[in-house]
Length: 467
Image 1 (tube, rainbow, N blue to C red):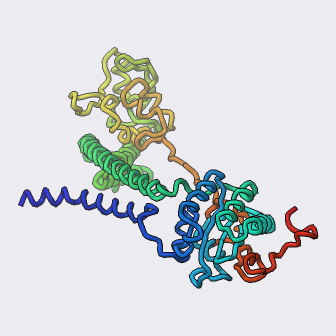
Image 2: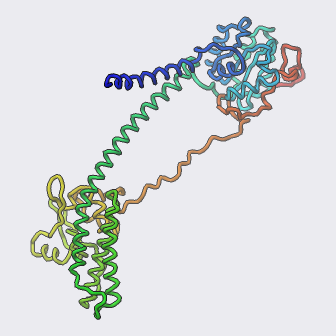
Image 3: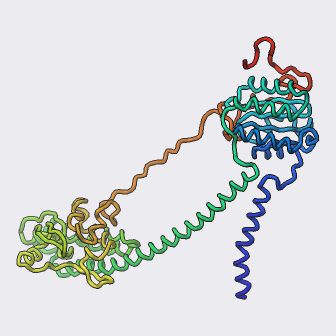
C-alpha cells in the first residue's frame, strides 16, 4: 500500500507536466496542419505571419511568405497580409471585416484574393487613400505576380503605417506567453505557502501572547473584584446619596465589562478593552471614597505607573529605569513615599522566559495591556513614560498594539483606464472587434477590384489620391 501511495504522489507532477507539454505543442505555431479558412488565416496573422491558403501555395510559396514575413517584422509595422483563393471561405464582401474582427489588432490589412488585390486599414494606422494608392501602384507594376505585388506594397507602405507590429517571434510567441505564466503560477504557489506558514507562525505566537496576557489580566480582574468585596458600602444605607450610588454602580459595571471582555478576547489587542474598564472602575472607587470621606473629588489622572492595580496616581515623581534616563511618571501615594525615602517602588512584574520581569521589559505583547490603562490620557503619555524600555519601542511608531496608532489610509487606487475611440486606434493596438467597420469593406467592384477591371476609386490623372 505504501508503494502505491508513493507512485500516486509522484505521478501527479508528471501528469501535470505532460498536460503542459501537450498544451505547448498545441499552441506553438507550426505544430498543426492548416486546413484553410478565416480561422486559420486569423491565427497566422495574430502570430505576425503572412498567411497563405493551401490552395494558393502554387502561386505564392511558403518560402516567399516567410521572406515577406521577415520584411514586415524588420519594418516593425502592423501590416497583415493574406493570400487566399476566390472562394466562399473568404466572402468577397466581408473578408476584410472578418479578418480584422478575428485578428483584433489595428493595422493595415492587405489581401490577395484569387486574382484581386486590395488593402483596408484602421484610420489611426494608415490613411485609406494612401493605402489604396500604394496597393494600386504595386498591383499595376507586377501584372499578377503575387510575390512582387505584396513585396512592393509592404516595402513602400510600411514607412506610412503608424504604430508597431503586435507580438514577437511567431515561432515562440505562445511559448513565451505560457512559460512565464507557468513560472508565475509556481512562484505564486511558493509565495502562498510561505505566507500561509508565516501566518500560522504569527497566529501561534499571538495565541501564546494572549495566554500570557490572560494570566496577568485575570490577576488584575481578581484584584479589582477583591477591592469591591472589601468595600464597606451599602447603597441603601441612610448616609448614601445618589452620587455615591452612581460611583458604586459604575465600578460594578466596569468589573462586569472587564470579565465579559476577557472571556470574549481572541487576540492580544482585545485586552485593551479589559484594562480600560478596570482603569475606569478604579477611578470610580477613588471618587466614591472621596465622597464618603468628605474630601475634594480627585482629578482624573493616569493609574500608578509602577502597578496600575495601585489605583489612580496622586502625583508625578522623578524615576529612571535601570540604565535609562530619568523621567516624570505618575505614581500612587505609597510609591511616592517609597521613592522619597530612597526605596524601590512596588513594581508590577510578569512571568517571562527569563523569569519575572517588570511589565515594561516583558515584550511587545503587553502593549495592549498598558494601552488600556494609560491610552486615555493622550497619545504621547506612554511613549514618554516607557522610553528606553523594551515596551517603549512598541509605542515609538504608529503600529503600536492597540494604542494610539492611526489606521493605514491607502486611499483608492486610481489606475486610470483604457479609452479612446476605436477609430483612432494606432497600428498594433489590440481592439478586438471594436473598430470602424466602414473602413473594412470587401471586394465589391467599387473598392479596388484591381484584377477584375473594377474602378479603383481614385483619379490618378486628375489630382486625386494622397499626393
